[in-house]
Length: 552
Image 1 (tube, rainbow, N blue to C red):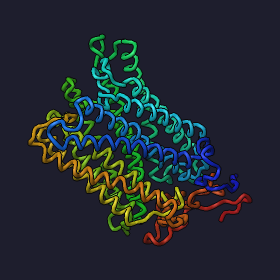
Image 2 (tube, rainbow, N blue to C red):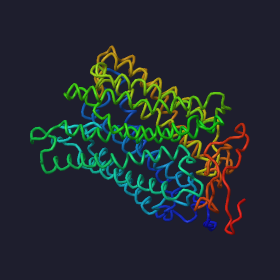
Image 3 (tube, helix red, strand yellow):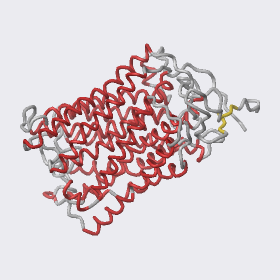
Image 4 (tube, helix red, strand yellow):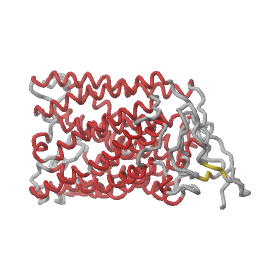
């Protein structure tokens, strides 16, 4: 078998060549770092908007901002967090860094396209944030008509363009992942030797490619209607507002899985390593990712139970919405079975993994209330929706994202972080999240509508509890920024495999060389094999083939 011997190069983290080398790099690991910086800035701005929202809701009256400004705040929070953080965070950061290394490739299939995707994303983020800060948008993150088609004095047009551009970045990344996984796997890396991280990233990429163009079409139609007054959605122009909802949710419910499937990708790696066991039912978990991707396209109508759609359509969407929970439940049950009798090590990434299971389970179970026609009618547009959405999208996805960042931080940077503050941060986030959003479930059940900043005094106690929890949550989110940055200068040097983990990414140095491996790895076993506790190294599962043909 022919192999490629790669020249030695400086580690990608070496910045001695200056900023220009970073801005023109085609190294997937450096591009992942650039994405990490960008999405962190977006997260901070989205979190600032959320802070102002919670401060306003401390009292029943409008004491902090006006009605118009409040509408702009929750729109800014939603747009930034969903389009500029939750959707790109794990694929663009962890996926970019890990997909080639995990399959034994030297880079992604299209390195220049990868760099271009980051530049397109930066343009979208810059344009979107500029528009939100210089006039804002008051439509909500869903851009429902007639809010988005009226001639209100807000910056709807540039935000629509920003969302349209961001979609191209996602598609570029997804195409790169699919081609790389198909064509660039190391010798011996069969489909059922792939880490489950790769299976989930592959399924996510398929959803992105199939769903994102639909959102792009919807945003472009909305833009044409607003600028040229061509009637698509506005009844005053002969349009149908429900058409926009169908187009928007046909993308946006699969987008839920664009956000959560990468979190599940991280979760499988953390559970396997820190319980020292192969994932229970590997093939079931792998195909569950594909099943989630397929079912995700069939359930958009449960967002429209109160829109006037037919009873028969509502019944079918309700049944399908219950069915889509099955592959997600398969994953949760299999992760739990993996933990059973495992040699569990409660280090920081594992704390995030356990927190993910708790938050995702609550989010999933409360989703069953919304899949039922009868209860959805009562709960629609209340704070129950807000709490459910945040438990799944923010609680679970961010838990997985931070767990992955902590797990692969030594590999990305070559530095270890302090374990004490990291564990404290994980606990603060879990506790703060519960304190923030459990009261919102109760508020929604009692009938408090979302997107209102003036409410009856009876709801104040629960809102105060939610705002207090948000302050704990904010502290938990802020801590990692400080100790992870400090670890770049003060952290201990990380060995190649600090966790004793299995996987090709742990078979190379920390951080990896430019082309990931000095020689092409040859895979001889499946993805999860462990010999003992986390202090021990796993058995070798790769070999290296020398140019002369001898295998060591």
